[in-house]
Amino acid sequence: METTKPLIGINCAFQAEGDRFNDRLHLARIYVQAVEKTGGIPILLPIVENEGSVRAMMDEVDGLLMSGGGGLPAKFTRDQTLPGLAEQNPIRHRFDVQIVKLALERDLPILGICRGHQTVNEVAGGTLHLSLQEKTRQEHRQESPDDQVCHQIRIAENSRLASFMGTTGVGVNSFHRQAVDRLAPGMRAVAWADDGILEAYESDRHLFVLGCQFHPESLMVRDSRFAAIYGAFVQAATQYHDKVSRPGIRTRYHERGH
Image (cartoon, rainbow, N blue to C red; front, side, top):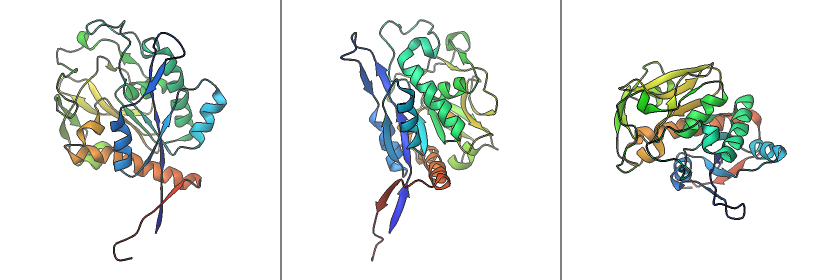
């Protein structure tokens, strides 16, 4: 029996090494594993400058996973107020903006994680709190391992997030120094930390757009409710794939007894 799995494009982090011959693109493997475990085919999207190349890559994917920060340049100390996303990492940000714009225009399913969650909202017309220290005394940068809980969040009862996670409250991890401030038009806040910091939003205008300030791909190792986030995203990508009727990648498997 054959089934078609959706192709999930994942953006990469950019690390400058002082000269163009050694600059690096990288991605934490956990994102790839989360997509694969929930039924998608992960495809890494390298940072390119040619607009035609960007469009060609986006033509091939059924969903866009916007990954987290991947580390900050050494010039930014732990305790200083960070600049906006563009100034933090200009090369990455230019590419990220391009692919998010294309995804929104095409109604391509999007899952934004941490920095990705902030980027999607910014591209769609929202803004960012540049310093959480000025907004809250609650710690949002845990020192414990990624699969450990840092604080609780409250999830709106009428949200898609609550529906597929099966809960209106859960503990999450936290690794951010900035947060979404004003939501973009069409986005709806659906989860908050105890101090009121926005932890998740959804779109009322698109097939599937979900932003998570936390990292469900790390938490799903211990708690299957977080796997449901990736599962819902991959399912939406499957719907998109079927709608545009692309050949895609077919995976053959055998049912027991056949």
